Amino acid sequence: MRNLKITLQYDGTNYVGWQRQARGTSIQGLLEDALEPIAGTRITVHGAGRTDAGVHALAQVASVSFPGAHDAPVLARALNAVLPTDVRVLSVADVPADFHARFSAVGKTYEYRIVNAPIVSPFLVRYAWHIHHDLDVDAMKRASSHLIGMHDFAGFQGAGSDVASSQRTIQAIDWENGRGHDNPLVIRLRGDGFLRHMVRNIVGTLVEIGGGRWMSDRILDILASRDRSQAGTTAPAHGLFLVRVEYSTD
Amino acid sequence: MRNLKITLQYDGTNYVGWQRQARGTSIQGLLEDALEPIAGTRITVHGAGRTDAGVHALAQVASVSFPGAHDAPVLARALNAVLPTDVRVLSVADVPADFHARFSAVGKTYEYRIVNAPIVSPFLVRYAWHIHHDLDVDAMKRASSHLIGMHDFAGFQGAGSDVASSQRTIQAIDWENGRGHDNPLVIRLRGDGFLRHMVRNIVGTLVEIGGGRWMSDRILDILASRDRSQAGTTAPAHGLFLVRVEYSTD
Image (cartoon, rainbow over all chains, first blue to last red; front, side):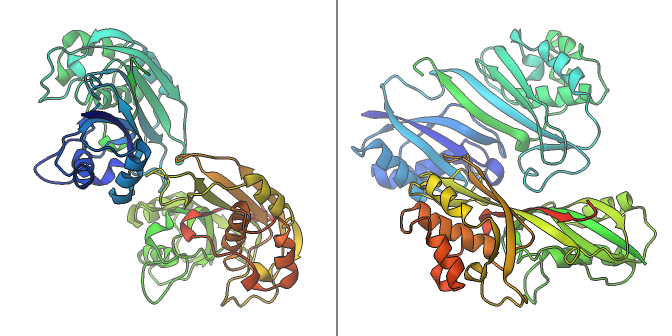
Protein backbone atom coordinates (compact mmCIF):
# COMPACT_ATOMS: atom_id res chain seq x y z
CA MET A 1 0.00 0.00 0.00
CA ARG A 2 1.15 3.54 -0.70
CA ASN A 3 2.10 5.77 2.18
CA LEU A 4 1.24 9.44 1.77
CA LYS A 5 2.47 12.56 3.56
CA ILE A 6 -0.17 15.29 3.53
CA THR A 7 0.77 18.83 4.58
CA LEU A 8 -2.11 21.03 5.72
CA GLN A 9 -2.76 24.61 6.71
CA TYR A 10 -5.80 25.47 8.77
CA ASP A 11 -7.54 28.22 10.67
CA GLY A 12 -8.48 26.41 13.88
CA THR A 13 -11.18 28.90 14.93
CA ASN A 14 -14.15 26.72 14.00
CA TYR A 15 -12.77 23.31 14.99
CA VAL A 16 -12.46 21.11 18.06
CA GLY A 17 -8.79 20.58 17.18
CA TRP A 18 -6.84 18.10 15.10
CA GLN A 19 -8.13 14.93 16.74
CA ARG A 20 -11.47 13.28 16.01
CA GLN A 21 -13.92 13.81 18.90
CA ALA A 22 -17.36 12.49 19.81
CA ARG A 23 -18.77 15.98 19.22
CA GLY A 24 -17.76 18.80 16.94
CA THR A 25 -15.75 18.93 13.75
CA SER A 26 -12.07 18.02 13.84
CA ILE A 27 -9.43 18.52 11.17
CA GLN A 28 -8.62 14.81 11.26
CA GLY A 29 -12.29 13.97 10.77
CA LEU A 30 -12.64 16.41 7.86
CA LEU A 31 -9.59 14.93 6.15
CA GLU A 32 -10.78 11.35 6.68
CA ASP A 33 -14.25 12.29 5.37
CA ALA A 34 -12.65 13.86 2.30
CA LEU A 35 -10.43 10.82 1.68
CA GLU A 36 -13.16 8.19 2.10
CA PRO A 37 -14.95 8.57 -1.28
CA ILE A 38 -11.59 8.81 -3.08
CA ALA A 39 -10.14 5.77 -1.33
CA GLY A 40 -13.43 3.86 -1.52
CA THR A 41 -13.01 2.94 2.14
CA ARG A 42 -12.59 4.60 5.52
CA ILE A 43 -8.92 5.22 6.28
CA THR A 44 -7.28 6.70 9.37
CA VAL A 45 -4.88 9.62 9.07
CA HIS A 46 -2.18 10.24 11.66
CA GLY A 47 -1.24 13.80 12.54
CA ALA A 48 2.20 15.01 13.64
CA GLY A 49 0.75 17.06 16.47
CA ARG A 50 -2.66 17.02 18.11
CA THR A 51 -3.41 20.72 17.93
CA ASP A 52 -6.06 21.70 20.48
CA ALA A 53 -9.42 23.31 19.76
CA GLY A 54 -8.83 26.75 18.26
CA VAL A 55 -5.13 26.24 17.55
CA HIS A 56 -4.03 27.05 13.99
CA ALA A 57 -1.54 25.32 11.72
CA LEU A 58 0.63 26.78 8.98
CA ALA A 59 1.97 23.33 8.09
CA GLN A 60 0.55 20.38 10.00
CA VAL A 61 1.66 17.01 8.63
CA ALA A 62 -0.44 13.86 8.37
CA SER A 63 0.41 10.39 7.10
CA VAL A 64 -1.99 7.80 5.73
CA SER A 65 -1.89 4.40 4.06
CA PHE A 66 -3.72 5.00 0.83
CA PRO A 67 -5.08 2.28 -1.48
CA GLY A 68 -5.63 4.40 -4.65
CA ALA A 69 -3.36 5.00 -7.66
CA HIS A 70 -4.13 8.72 -8.07
CA ASP A 71 -1.25 11.09 -8.76
CA ALA A 72 -0.32 13.03 -5.62
CA PRO A 73 -1.14 16.51 -7.09
CA VAL A 74 -4.50 15.20 -8.33
CA LEU A 75 -5.24 13.96 -4.82
CA ALA A 76 -4.35 17.37 -3.34
CA ARG A 77 -6.76 19.10 -5.73
CA ALA A 78 -9.50 16.53 -5.07
CA LEU A 79 -9.16 17.03 -1.30
CA ASN A 80 -9.20 20.84 -1.58
CA ALA A 81 -12.30 20.63 -3.76
CA VAL A 82 -14.28 19.13 -0.86
CA LEU A 83 -12.56 20.56 2.23
CA PRO A 84 -13.87 23.86 3.64
CA THR A 85 -11.79 26.93 2.69
CA ASP A 86 -10.41 27.26 6.23
CA VAL A 87 -8.59 23.93 5.77
CA ARG A 88 -6.22 23.58 2.80
CA VAL A 89 -4.02 20.75 1.66
CA LEU A 90 -0.69 22.39 0.74
CA SER A 91 0.83 19.21 -0.69
CA VAL A 92 0.52 15.45 -0.98
CA ALA A 93 3.64 13.34 -1.46
CA ASP A 94 4.47 9.63 -1.66
CA VAL A 95 6.81 8.68 1.17
CA PRO A 96 8.55 5.45 2.27
CA ALA A 97 6.38 2.89 4.07
CA ASP A 98 8.07 3.53 7.43
CA PHE A 99 7.19 7.24 7.47
CA HIS A 100 4.75 8.18 10.24
CA ALA A 101 3.72 11.83 10.68
CA ARG A 102 4.00 11.64 14.46
CA PHE A 103 6.66 9.04 15.23
CA SER A 104 9.04 10.07 12.45
CA ALA A 105 8.99 13.74 13.47
CA VAL A 106 12.32 14.95 14.88
CA GLY A 107 11.32 18.54 15.57
CA LYS A 108 8.49 21.00 15.66
CA THR A 109 8.18 24.77 15.54
CA TYR A 110 5.32 26.62 17.17
CA GLU A 111 4.58 30.34 17.12
CA TYR A 112 2.59 32.23 19.72
CA ARG A 113 1.25 35.68 18.84
CA ILE A 114 0.37 38.38 21.35
CA VAL A 115 -1.12 41.79 20.61
CA ASN A 116 0.14 44.01 23.42
CA ALA A 117 -1.93 47.17 22.98
CA PRO A 118 -5.11 48.79 24.30
CA ILE A 119 -7.04 47.42 21.31
CA VAL A 120 -6.58 44.53 18.91
CA SER A 121 -7.00 44.75 15.16
CA PRO A 122 -10.13 43.06 13.73
CA PHE A 123 -7.71 41.17 11.48
CA LEU A 124 -5.80 39.69 14.43
CA VAL A 125 -8.53 39.15 17.01
CA ARG A 126 -8.86 35.46 16.11
CA TYR A 127 -5.10 34.96 15.70
CA ALA A 128 -3.45 36.56 18.73
CA TRP A 129 -3.85 36.85 22.49
CA HIS A 130 -4.87 40.38 23.33
CA ILE A 131 -3.07 41.74 26.40
CA HIS A 132 -3.94 45.30 27.38
CA HIS A 133 -1.32 46.03 30.02
CA ASP A 134 2.27 46.81 29.04
CA LEU A 135 4.51 43.76 28.88
CA ASP A 136 8.20 43.95 29.79
CA VAL A 137 9.39 41.99 26.75
CA ASP A 138 13.03 42.13 27.85
CA ALA A 139 12.12 40.37 31.10
CA MET A 140 10.16 37.78 29.10
CA LYS A 141 13.15 37.17 26.83
CA ARG A 142 15.51 36.79 29.80
CA ALA A 143 13.09 34.34 31.37
CA SER A 144 12.67 32.34 28.18
CA SER A 145 16.43 31.84 27.85
CA HIS A 146 16.25 29.51 30.88
CA LEU A 147 14.06 27.17 28.81
CA ILE A 148 16.65 26.54 26.07
CA GLY A 149 18.20 23.08 26.20
CA MET A 150 17.11 19.71 27.58
CA HIS A 151 14.84 19.91 30.61
CA ASP A 152 12.08 18.04 32.36
CA PHE A 153 9.11 20.21 31.39
CA ALA A 154 6.59 18.52 33.73
CA GLY A 155 5.91 21.91 35.33
CA PHE A 156 4.61 23.16 31.98
CA GLN A 157 2.64 20.04 31.08
CA GLY A 158 -1.16 20.10 30.90
CA ALA A 159 -3.19 17.52 32.80
CA GLY A 160 -4.42 14.35 31.09
CA SER A 161 -1.26 13.60 29.14
CA ASP A 162 -0.10 10.02 28.68
CA VAL A 163 3.51 10.51 27.57
CA ALA A 164 6.20 8.31 29.08
CA SER A 165 8.69 11.09 29.71
CA SER A 166 8.28 14.83 30.17
CA GLN A 167 11.88 15.48 29.13
CA ARG A 168 12.15 17.60 26.01
CA THR A 169 14.74 19.80 24.30
CA ILE A 170 14.02 23.35 23.18
CA GLN A 171 16.60 24.30 20.57
CA ALA A 172 15.65 27.92 20.05
CA ILE A 173 13.21 30.62 21.09
CA ASP A 174 13.05 33.54 18.66
CA TRP A 175 11.15 36.78 19.13
CA GLU A 176 9.59 39.28 16.78
CA ASN A 177 9.11 42.55 18.63
CA GLY A 178 5.65 43.59 17.49
CA ARG A 179 3.79 46.36 19.26
CA GLY A 180 0.49 48.07 18.55
CA HIS A 181 -2.98 46.90 17.59
CA ASP A 182 -1.99 45.38 14.25
CA ASN A 183 1.56 44.23 14.89
CA PRO A 184 1.85 41.17 17.11
CA LEU A 185 4.67 40.16 19.39
CA VAL A 186 5.69 36.71 18.11
CA ILE A 187 7.37 34.03 20.22
CA ARG A 188 8.70 31.17 18.09
CA LEU A 189 9.75 27.96 19.82
CA ARG A 190 11.66 25.17 18.11
CA GLY A 191 12.12 21.87 19.87
CA ASP A 192 12.31 18.12 19.47
CA GLY A 193 8.77 17.83 20.73
CA PHE A 194 6.30 19.55 23.01
CA LEU A 195 4.12 18.23 25.83
CA ARG A 196 0.39 18.83 26.04
CA HIS A 197 -0.28 22.61 26.47
CA MET A 198 3.47 23.13 26.95
CA VAL A 199 3.78 26.14 24.62
CA ARG A 200 0.63 27.74 26.01
CA ASN A 201 1.75 27.17 29.61
CA ILE A 202 5.18 28.62 28.84
CA VAL A 203 3.59 31.68 27.22
CA GLY A 204 1.13 32.09 30.10
CA THR A 205 4.09 32.07 32.49
CA LEU A 206 6.14 34.50 30.39
CA VAL A 207 3.17 36.87 30.34
CA GLU A 208 3.03 36.80 34.16
CA ILE A 209 6.72 37.67 34.18
CA GLY A 210 6.19 40.38 31.52
CA GLY A 211 3.44 41.87 33.66
CA GLY A 212 5.73 42.05 36.69
CA ARG A 213 3.99 39.45 38.83
CA TRP A 214 7.03 37.17 38.83
CA MET A 215 10.77 37.58 38.28
CA SER A 216 12.51 36.00 35.30
CA ASP A 217 14.05 33.21 37.34
CA ARG A 218 10.64 31.90 38.30
CA ILE A 219 11.14 29.74 35.19
CA LEU A 220 13.99 27.91 36.98
CA ASP A 221 11.75 27.25 39.99
CA ILE A 222 8.96 25.86 37.80
CA LEU A 223 11.38 23.59 35.94
CA ALA A 224 12.87 22.36 39.23
CA SER A 225 9.48 21.87 40.88
CA ARG A 226 8.04 19.76 38.02
CA ASP A 227 4.75 21.08 39.45
CA ARG A 228 2.23 22.52 36.98
CA SER A 229 0.60 24.58 39.75
CA GLN A 230 3.77 26.72 39.94
CA ALA A 231 3.45 27.94 36.35
CA GLY A 232 1.17 30.63 34.91
CA THR A 233 -2.24 30.19 33.34
CA THR A 234 -2.57 28.44 30.00
CA ALA A 235 -2.43 31.07 27.23
CA PRO A 236 -5.52 30.96 25.00
CA ALA A 237 -5.51 28.57 22.04
CA HIS A 238 -6.22 31.15 19.35
CA GLY A 239 -2.74 32.75 19.59
CA LEU A 240 -0.96 29.46 18.83
CA PHE A 241 0.23 28.25 15.41
CA LEU A 242 1.91 24.97 14.54
CA VAL A 243 4.45 26.35 12.06
CA ARG A 244 6.55 23.38 10.92
CA VAL A 245 7.22 19.72 11.55
CA GLU A 246 10.71 18.45 10.81
CA TYR A 247 11.74 14.99 9.65
CA SER A 248 15.21 13.52 9.35
CA THR A 249 14.49 12.93 5.66
CA ASP A 250 13.81 16.62 4.95
CA MET B 1 -20.99 71.74 19.42
CA ARG B 2 -17.80 69.68 19.38
CA ASN B 3 -16.65 68.14 16.12
CA LEU B 4 -14.99 64.74 16.39
CA LYS B 5 -12.78 62.80 14.03
CA ILE B 6 -13.11 59.05 14.55
CA THR B 7 -10.63 56.68 12.93
CA LEU B 8 -11.82 53.10 12.49
CA GLN B 9 -10.48 49.74 11.40
CA TYR B 10 -12.87 47.02 10.29
CA ASP B 11 -13.13 43.62 8.72
CA GLY B 12 -15.88 44.17 6.16
CA THR B 13 -16.72 40.48 5.74
CA ASN B 14 -19.94 40.55 7.74
CA TYR B 15 -21.25 43.99 6.73
CA VAL B 16 -23.24 45.63 3.95
CA GLY B 17 -20.56 48.32 3.73
CA TRP B 18 -19.94 51.67 5.35
CA GLN B 19 -23.28 53.27 4.53
CA ARG B 20 -26.53 52.66 6.40
CA GLN B 21 -28.94 50.49 4.36
CA ALA B 22 -32.53 49.42 4.71
CA ARG B 23 -31.36 45.86 5.32
CA GLY B 24 -28.22 44.45 6.87
CA THR B 25 -25.68 45.86 9.26
CA SER B 26 -23.51 48.77 8.15
CA ILE B 27 -20.43 50.20 9.83
CA GLN B 28 -22.05 53.66 9.89
CA GLY B 29 -25.13 52.19 11.56
CA LEU B 30 -23.05 50.33 14.14
CA LEU B 31 -21.14 53.49 14.99
CA GLU B 32 -24.32 55.59 15.24
CA ASP B 33 -25.93 52.91 17.42
CA ALA B 34 -22.87 52.92 19.68
CA LEU B 35 -22.84 56.74 19.92
CA GLU B 36 -26.56 57.17 20.63
CA PRO B 37 -26.66 56.15 24.32
CA ILE B 38 -23.47 58.13 25.00
CA ALA B 39 -24.71 61.27 23.22
CA GLY B 40 -28.23 60.85 24.58
CA THR B 41 -29.60 61.44 21.08
CA ARG B 42 -29.33 60.02 17.58
CA ILE B 43 -26.45 61.62 15.68
CA THR B 44 -25.30 61.09 12.10
CA VAL B 45 -21.68 60.23 11.35
CA HIS B 46 -20.08 61.06 8.01
CA GLY B 47 -17.52 58.69 6.51
CA ALA B 48 -14.58 59.62 4.31
CA GLY B 49 -15.32 56.83 1.86
CA ARG B 50 -18.38 54.68 1.33
CA THR B 51 -16.69 51.30 1.36
CA ASP B 52 -18.86 48.67 -0.35
CA ALA B 53 -20.19 45.49 1.18
CA GLY B 54 -17.27 43.23 2.08
CA VAL B 55 -14.58 45.91 1.69
CA HIS B 56 -12.21 46.29 4.63
CA ALA B 57 -10.68 49.38 6.21
CA LEU B 58 -7.35 49.77 7.99
CA ALA B 59 -8.14 53.42 8.78
CA GLN B 60 -11.52 54.74 7.70
CA VAL B 61 -12.28 58.23 9.00
CA ALA B 62 -15.64 59.52 10.21
CA SER B 63 -16.67 62.93 11.52
CA VAL B 64 -19.57 63.73 13.82
CA SER B 65 -21.02 66.69 15.72
CA PHE B 66 -21.04 65.45 19.28
CA PRO B 67 -22.93 67.06 22.15
CA GLY B 68 -21.18 65.36 25.09
CA ALA B 69 -18.21 66.51 27.21
CA HIS B 70 -16.44 63.14 27.43
CA ASP B 71 -12.70 63.03 26.96
CA ALA B 72 -11.79 61.70 23.52
CA PRO B 73 -9.88 58.61 24.79
CA VAL B 74 -12.79 57.78 27.12
CA LEU B 75 -15.14 57.95 24.14
CA ALA B 76 -12.90 55.62 22.14
CA ARG B 77 -12.95 53.08 24.95
CA ALA B 78 -16.71 53.41 25.41
CA LEU B 79 -17.31 52.81 21.70
CA ASN B 80 -15.00 49.80 21.58
CA ALA B 81 -16.75 48.37 24.61
CA VAL B 82 -20.00 48.05 22.63
CA LEU B 83 -18.82 47.64 19.03
CA PRO B 84 -18.27 44.07 17.76
CA THR B 85 -14.63 42.95 17.70
CA ASP B 86 -14.48 43.15 13.89
CA VAL B 87 -14.96 46.92 14.12
CA ARG B 88 -12.47 48.93 16.25
CA VAL B 89 -12.17 52.60 16.95
CA LEU B 90 -8.45 53.36 16.64
CA SER B 91 -8.75 56.93 17.87
CA VAL B 92 -11.13 59.80 18.63
CA ALA B 93 -9.90 63.39 18.35
CA ASP B 94 -11.43 66.87 18.66
CA VAL B 95 -11.10 68.72 15.35
CA PRO B 96 -12.07 72.22 14.11
CA ALA B 97 -15.76 72.80 13.33
CA ASP B 98 -15.14 72.91 9.58
CA PHE B 99 -13.60 69.44 9.42
CA HIS B 100 -15.71 66.96 7.44
CA ALA B 101 -14.45 63.39 6.96
CA ARG B 102 -15.49 63.30 3.30
CA PHE B 103 -15.29 66.88 2.04
CA SER B 104 -12.06 67.74 3.84
CA ALA B 105 -10.25 64.67 2.52
CA VAL B 106 -7.47 65.53 0.06
CA GLY B 107 -6.26 62.03 -0.66
CA LYS B 108 -6.94 58.35 -0.13
CA THR B 109 -4.93 55.19 -0.32
CA TYR B 110 -6.45 51.83 -1.18
CA GLU B 111 -4.78 48.44 -1.30
CA TYR B 112 -5.93 45.49 -3.34
CA ARG B 113 -4.63 42.02 -2.46
CA ILE B 114 -4.45 39.07 -4.85
CA VAL B 115 -3.30 35.56 -4.04
CA ASN B 116 -1.91 34.24 -7.31
CA ALA B 117 -1.43 30.53 -6.60
CA PRO B 118 -3.25 27.22 -7.05
CA ILE B 119 -4.58 27.48 -3.49
CA VAL B 120 -5.22 30.30 -1.07
CA SER B 121 -4.27 30.27 2.60
CA PRO B 122 -7.18 29.92 5.06
CA PHE B 123 -5.80 33.10 6.66
CA LEU B 124 -6.16 35.11 3.45
CA VAL B 125 -9.30 33.63 1.89
CA ARG B 126 -11.46 36.47 3.22
CA TYR B 127 -8.83 39.14 2.52
CA ALA B 128 -7.56 38.54 -1.01
CA TRP B 129 -8.84 37.70 -4.49
CA HIS B 130 -7.76 34.17 -5.34
CA ILE B 131 -6.55 33.84 -8.93
CA HIS B 132 -5.40 30.38 -9.96
CA HIS B 133 -3.81 31.05 -13.35
CA ASP B 134 -0.37 32.68 -13.60
CA LEU B 135 -0.46 36.44 -13.81
CA ASP B 136 2.13 38.39 -15.79
CA VAL B 137 2.77 40.97 -13.10
CA ASP B 138 5.24 42.91 -15.26
CA ALA B 139 2.53 43.45 -17.88
CA MET B 140 0.13 44.55 -15.12
CA LYS B 141 2.71 47.06 -13.82
CA ARG B 142 3.33 48.45 -17.29
CA ALA B 143 -0.42 48.80 -17.81
CA SER B 144 -0.92 50.48 -14.43
CA SER B 145 1.68 53.14 -15.23
CA HIS B 146 -0.78 54.58 -17.80
CA LEU B 147 -3.16 55.36 -14.91
CA ILE B 148 -0.79 57.69 -13.05
CA GLY B 149 -1.70 61.37 -13.29
CA MET B 150 -4.93 63.25 -13.90
CA HIS B 151 -7.43 61.43 -16.11
CA ASP B 152 -11.13 61.12 -16.72
CA PHE B 153 -11.76 57.73 -15.13
CA ALA B 154 -15.36 57.34 -16.39
CA GLY B 155 -14.35 54.06 -18.07
CA PHE B 156 -13.55 52.65 -14.62
CA GLN B 157 -16.59 54.06 -12.82
CA GLY B 158 -19.33 51.76 -11.56
CA ALA B 159 -22.95 52.44 -12.43
CA GLY B 160 -25.23 54.41 -10.10
CA SER B 161 -22.73 57.09 -9.13
CA ASP B 162 -23.86 60.70 -8.69
CA VAL B 163 -20.53 62.55 -8.79
CA ALA B 164 -20.30 65.76 -10.84
CA SER B 165 -16.97 64.94 -12.46
CA SER B 166 -15.21 61.67 -13.18
CA GLN B 167 -11.81 63.38 -13.36
CA ARG B 168 -9.39 62.18 -10.71
CA THR B 169 -5.65 62.12 -10.10
CA ILE B 170 -3.75 58.98 -9.20
CA GLN B 171 -0.46 60.02 -7.60
CA ALA B 172 1.14 56.62 -7.20
CA ILE B 173 0.60 52.90 -7.71
CA ASP B 174 2.95 50.73 -5.68
CA TRP B 175 3.33 46.99 -5.87
CA GLU B 176 4.35 44.29 -3.43
CA ASN B 177 5.36 41.21 -5.38
CA GLY B 178 3.77 38.44 -3.34
CA ARG B 179 3.49 34.96 -4.72
CA GLY B 180 2.26 31.69 -3.27
CA HIS B 181 -0.72 30.66 -1.17
CA ASP B 182 0.13 32.81 1.85
CA ASN B 183 1.88 35.79 0.31
CA PRO B 184 -0.40 38.18 -1.58
CA LEU B 185 0.41 40.41 -4.49
CA VAL B 186 -0.47 43.89 -3.23
CA ILE B 187 -1.46 46.81 -5.48
CA ARG B 188 -1.50 50.10 -3.55
CA LEU B 189 -3.15 53.13 -5.18
CA ARG B 190 -2.87 56.67 -3.86
CA GLY B 191 -5.02 59.40 -5.34
CA ASP B 192 -6.98 62.54 -4.62
CA GLY B 193 -10.17 60.53 -4.70
CA PHE B 194 -11.69 57.44 -6.27
CA LEU B 195 -14.96 56.93 -8.14
CA ARG B 196 -17.44 54.21 -7.28
CA HIS B 197 -15.85 50.77 -7.87
CA MET B 198 -12.87 52.51 -9.51
CA VAL B 199 -10.16 50.54 -7.72
CA ARG B 200 -11.97 47.25 -8.22
CA ASN B 201 -12.57 47.99 -11.92
CA ILE B 202 -8.92 48.95 -12.38
CA VAL B 203 -7.79 45.73 -10.68
CA GLY B 204 -10.26 43.64 -12.71
CA THR B 205 -8.80 45.17 -15.87
CA LEU B 206 -5.19 44.66 -14.75
CA VAL B 207 -5.98 41.01 -14.06
CA GLU B 208 -7.30 40.57 -17.62
CA ILE B 209 -4.02 42.07 -18.84
CA GLY B 210 -2.00 39.87 -16.47
CA GLY B 211 -3.85 36.83 -17.79
CA GLY B 212 -2.93 37.74 -21.37
CA ARG B 213 -6.43 38.56 -22.63
CA TRP B 214 -5.52 42.19 -23.31
CA MET B 215 -2.31 44.12 -23.97
CA SER B 216 -1.03 46.73 -21.52
CA ASP B 217 -2.17 49.67 -23.64
CA ARG B 218 -5.78 48.59 -23.38
CA ILE B 219 -5.75 50.94 -20.36
CA LEU B 220 -5.26 53.89 -22.72
CA ASP B 221 -8.26 52.79 -24.82
CA ILE B 222 -10.49 52.47 -21.75
CA LEU B 223 -9.46 55.91 -20.47
CA ALA B 224 -10.09 57.45 -23.92
CA SER B 225 -13.42 55.66 -24.39
CA ARG B 226 -14.85 56.78 -21.04
CA ASP B 227 -16.96 53.62 -21.51
CA ARG B 228 -17.24 51.24 -18.57
CA SER B 229 -18.06 48.34 -20.88
CA GLN B 230 -14.50 48.49 -22.26
CA ALA B 231 -12.90 47.69 -18.88
CA GLY B 232 -12.59 44.34 -17.12
CA THR B 233 -14.90 42.82 -14.54
CA THR B 234 -15.15 44.39 -11.10
CA ALA B 235 -12.66 42.65 -8.80
CA PRO B 236 -14.34 41.14 -5.73
CA ALA B 237 -14.85 43.37 -2.69
CA HIS B 238 -13.03 41.16 -0.18
CA GLY B 239 -9.57 41.91 -1.65
CA LEU B 240 -9.95 45.66 -1.13
CA PHE B 241 -8.74 47.71 1.86
CA LEU B 242 -9.16 51.42 2.51
CA VAL B 243 -5.69 52.07 3.94
CA ARG B 244 -5.55 55.79 4.72
CA VAL B 245 -7.43 59.06 4.27
CA GLU B 246 -5.34 62.22 4.03
CA TYR B 247 -6.29 65.73 5.17
CA SER B 248 -4.51 68.97 4.53
CA THR B 249 -4.25 69.40 8.32
CA ASP B 250 -2.34 66.11 8.81
